[in-house]
Image (cartoon, rainbow, N blue to C red; front, side, top):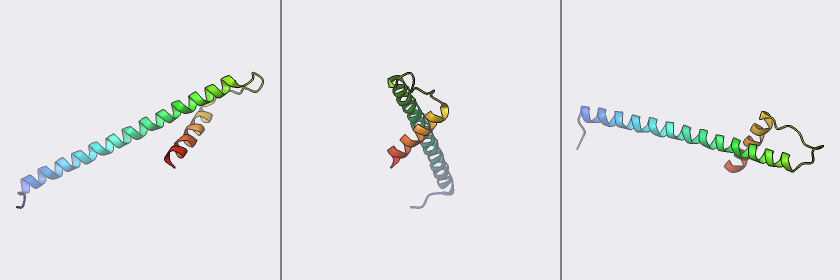
Length: 78
């Protein structure tokens, strides 16, 4: 049995709304995962810095955190 024009229109709207919601949820999940990798990278760098001798210790920079987070993400996704 075929849908009426109005029913098809409502179904199209519902499908578009669900697709949009799913896309927004996926984007939110990706941001959450990326933030978790940054937190993990920071914790690793802080712990590594803490265990080094004072003479060997270096500052932890934002670029070091993001570089390690990128490496961790690549490892997890491989």
